[in-house]
Image 1: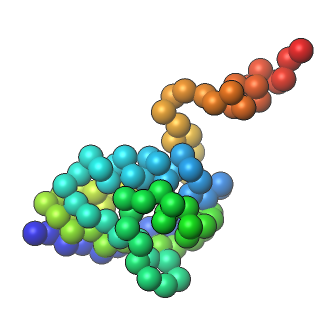
Image 2 (image 1 turned 180 degrees about the horizontal axis):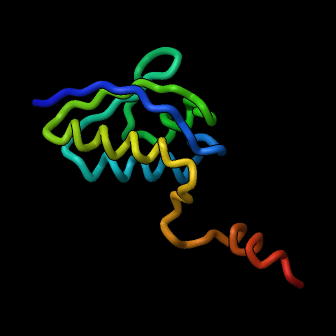
Length: 108
């Protein structure tokens, strides 16, 4: 079994919000690896969106990850890429009603 540890800095100006956390879980689920994240304390399981959001990771946070499994190195690269991308929307391509209203300028 492969094991890798690394640090990533959150570059998204909004930090790790729901969409980023969801995308993080999707990336991890697509790989054969278990991933844990540590920020100021005990490691948490990256398969739980509540655990990830509970860390309240803001722009500039430096966090430590550990991955174990056959795809440990691949998931490390994918997670680091996600957190390093400060321009990504992280959405699935569909806008929420609120986002759509913002884009339309709340036309009446």
